[in-house]
Length: 477
Image 1 (spheres, one colour):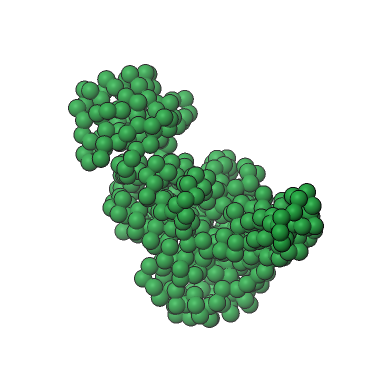
Image 2 (cartoon, one colour):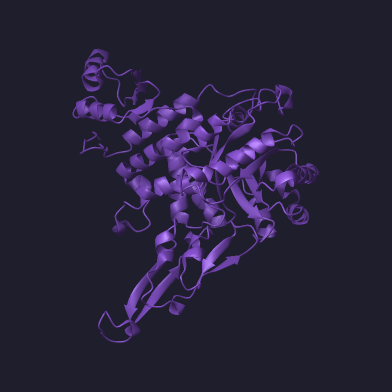
């Protein structure tokens, strides 16, 4: 199929552009394995691990599938999801579709999230009865929900009545349970205090069965840092099922001076019957990355706090909770981005040889937000759309995802795919206009679908980009 150019941005009528962009990213990761480690572990050691958080309570399988597809193409190392069989299935389906588009893509590890304490904010759902709401309510809960998990409609009671007569109206709808992930923003904005948070604990027996699946690679245990008894109880309930996974992550908040002692106690418990990799998720400001720049400060401060303590427990360390497009810059300012030594501490204080202190970053709300904007553009008549059926939107979503994943992976580029026949000049000009600025120059990576005549391309290149610094990456279809 020949690509066709539309008005900016140009969108191709096949997966050719998506494949080109994803293959370019995949190619840039090759040859970076070290010491025989799995690629995910090698990424943690280098400090360029990226995890997508679908949400411990987010259970919209259609969205989870599309998010997993897009971020697999973008090169994430892990996808974290609810410990629910249908959600795990949706993640794996998205990964499989991504691999059908780009066979060389790395399969990310699939992680399921559970909790040891019902007080953990990630494991709750909003709930209210819309019939208790005044019909003239301005519905601030609906407006503030980042997951589009609240839908309210005004309807007439009985026959036809004047719209201005509120006594003849009522609200219908409410919380879309599978989309609510418990951020709690609706709780504080309800002017009538009608919204409740319903907390729960994932069933350990169900989780243990999930861990036996060959398409689940890791588990994350969320803990509140308020004592080890509940963690120990959950650990005992999971039993030997934990040995079916490659990695166990523990997500915890900064609880001050007692943080390291708490972590050490948990590490001792886990050592009892687990021989795989362990990871500490530093949960700064939970479920807030989509709010703004300031949301990322708490997780970076948490990292700085632990970096100052040399006897912290072994394992990989990863940021979460408020992470967004500003996190990498904040880490760099703190001297912790892919650094193998802690600021002000000798290298001997690091766990492992030449291992980055911060193994990577997990993105949740912000990652879902930037791709979700694209998903919402798909016309409503398609219902629960499969994003691969809409290559133009898939390309746009992938470009969004790469703006987040790329800086962690060390990629500062914008890809443009073009068939050097009809529309090639337009494609190159669009690429030139959409260069990603890196310092004092511009860097453009073009991955061509066909193997064009070099001289012709070189001429087009300079016509399109002028004096920009460019790097060409050629391959045959």
